[in-house]
Structure formats: C-alpha cells, structure tokens
Image (cartoon, rainbow over all chains, first blue to last red; front, side, top):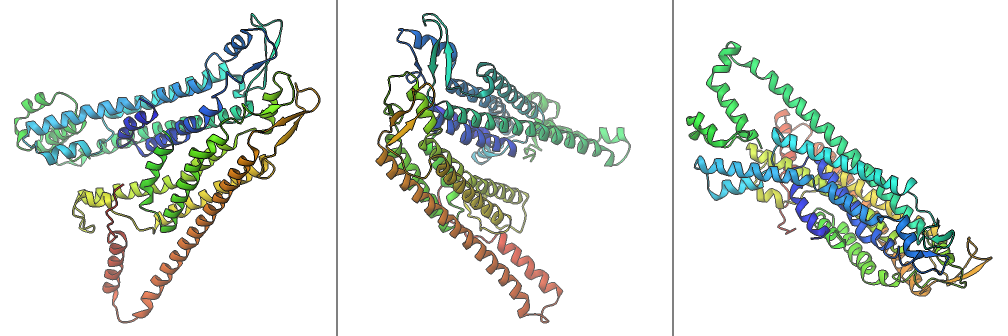
Length: 279
Length: 262
C-alpha cells in the first residue's frame, strides 16, 4: 500500500464529489503528494547523514539531530496527507451503503436485471439527505486536520524556516557546539511551497463547505415553496395520494429508514416500483 | 503518485488535443520526464556528497553548498514539469463537464442529441470550439508562462546555464576563502543545455499551437460571416432560423466519434 494505492482508493470517491471537491483532490495529488514523492523526499534524503557538528565527540551528532528534529518534515507531511485524504472514505462508505440499499430495493421490486444493477453502480449519487451530512462532516474533518498539522509544524519549526546553523548543548556534546544543516535554503523553499498548497486546500475546503450549505438552503427553499401550489386546502393536499407518493419518493431518494418497513406500510409501492430518477 | 500516474492522467487529455498538442505531450514525456528520471537524477545523485571543499572546518561544506545551490537543478526541473503539465487538466475538467451535460440531456430524452447510448458520449471526442476553445487557449498560455518563468529562474539562479568546476566560498564558518569543487560539472552542463533546448522546443510547439488555434478561429468566423452573404434575399425568416438550428446541432452534436481507448 503506497501513494498509488491511496490514489486508486480515492479516485472512486471523486465521482460522488462536488466540482470543488474534485479540484481539491487534484491539488492534493498533483501539487502535494507528487511533489512530496518526486522532489521533497530527495531533498530530505540526506538530512541526518549530512547533519554535521563541529566536534569529534561520539554521539553528539545523533543527539543534536534528535533534539532539533523530533519528527522530520517528510514524515509529518506524509501523516498530514494521509489524515487529510481519509475522511473522503466516510463518503465512499456511505455511498456504498446507499448503493446496497438501492440494489435491495430493485431486487424487492423485481427489477434486478443486470442493466439496472450496473446503473446503480455507475450513477452519481446526489449529495442530499444523510449523504449531505456525511459529506459535510468529511469536509470539516479535512479542515480540522489541515489546521492541526499546520499548527504542529509552526510549533516544531517556528517561522517555517530552516536555519543553516543550530547551537547544541545536549549531553554528550562538550559546552556549546555548532551544528550545520544540509540544504537549508532548498528545504525552506519546499516548506513554503507545501505550506502554500496546504492553505490553498484549506480555502478550497471552506469554499466547498459554503457551497454545500448554500445548496442545502436553496433546496429547502424550493421544497417549502412547492406544497402551496397544489389544489385544495393545505390539509386536503397533505392527505392526497399525490402528496403521499411525493413523500414516498423523497424517502426513497434519501434512503432513510428501513426499506422493508416502507414496503409494508405502502403495499401499492411494489407496483410503482421504479426507482425515483433523482440522479 | 509519481511520473507514471501523471502520464496516466495526461494520457486522457491527449484525446482532445490538437495534433501539435499531442506532439508536445510526447516531447514532454519522452525527452524531458524520461530523461530526468533515467539519466539526470543519477548525474545529480551525488551532488552534495561529492561536493568537496578544501578545508577541514566542519560545516563549511554544508554552508557553501547551500550558498551556491539554493535549489537543485533536479528539483527545479521536477517542479517545472509538474507546473507545465497541469494546465492540460483544465481542458480535461472542461471536457468532463461537457460530457456530464450531454449525459444529462441524453437521460432527459432530448431529441437534439442523437446518441445511441451513454458509452458513445463517453468515447466521443469534442471539437475545440466555443468555450472549450477558450479553455484550451488559456491552458496553452499558462504553459508558456510557466516555461518562461522557470527558464528565467534557472538563468537567474545559476548565472547562465554552465556548471563551473570550482567555486570560491567565504561564508561563515569557512576560514577566509575556501575552494570548493563541484562533482561532474561537464556532464551537468551537457544535461542542463539539453533540458534547456528541449524546453525551448516545447515553447516553440506551444507558440505554434496557439497560432494554429487562432488561425482556425478566424477562419471559422470568416466562413460564418461569409455564409449569409450568399443568400441575402432568397431565404425567409423561418429558413434562416432552421439553418441556424441546424448549424448549432451540427456544431454541438455532430462530432467525430473516435474510438480511442483511454
């Protein structure tokens, strides 16, 4: 399991994301993971072997390196990228669950032929109902992880800058010893680059959150304005079979509640068993 | 996620490029990315280990190396290649958006688009016109800008494109002035010049593609302008409307179906 494996897993999620989500995923893979793998890893490759201290005291080199670099940038970035990309799997799991429910419905209503099953697998789920909540949670978690890691970076390596020289007094180094870091400028450039892309990802996540909230409010506004346009009184309309059918359709779309209960409550549903084209 | 994955992603974009765009992509992958991976990375592999300074002062070598090589050639080329190839994704996103719209129309049962099934929409190649033309042209423009910026950054950082054999360093903690020797300077110069030459070829290809797209655009516009002039008084309003509709249909739906596998 390496970055390519993660890419395969997350490409599936791509289909059910919003457009901003897809842009976010591309930025993550191309400007962060790929840069990490093809460039940054070779910059930090010799970070310990080329860390030189002005002393011949055995052990001083190792102790000073460990004191100033409790966890290497590369490992921190790898952890950050893994944690930031995995909330998308919540969405993947929920989509898989919904697809499973849809397949069950097809089987129960007698439409379980290969063509319908394939379409269930291939069609894009609308982000509404409980899937909306899952999606929003995943975006919130992404934001949280990004912010936490940026803070950790700032705490461990103040100013995001890599200095050329560090003065070390840890035992067994005699008095104060000058230690020199390898490629500090190149490391600073890449740290700043990764920081900028991380900020871009945060902005994209916030934009996606705003977009989802606005979409939900707009949908709710449209939903509220529909019932009054029906014939008769409000209560008369509520009891009409059309309204009941609309409710059933909405429930089918949002996949809430147990399917069997639904079918037991509305036995005529088995005849009108075509899946609502909410896609 | 490495160069192979980038190749997979960009291979899909290839389908919707012009012929010059396809040549550009081939040059990019074979003469730049492949050379970088199989040759250049080995040449620069021991750049710091074999960077030797004429002093026993600990830390002097590190500091001098950092002073003369703020960012290694290899990393600069890797960043350049990533930045130069990503504008093509704008085109891929636009094509995916158009496909999505066509699929929606197809599902609604629109009579305008006569496709047999969704598979045909997926395999269809879109003509570069309308908003896709603007996206494509912008992507070429960005490519040009990134290429130029990185070539300038190279020239600025390394005072030309030559790798010197000897560098004189007097940064602290080096005592006075110290001679430092670069490993494989000639081989590095050869590869630097090679990469610069290929970069220039790519710039030329991009400029040619831009000119080609502009020429096509103006030709198409002049053909459209020329058509109504042939029948000024012979058509009535209905026929004109029908002709316009036919043109729209043929422009958006009557595209060549090329069965490329992605």
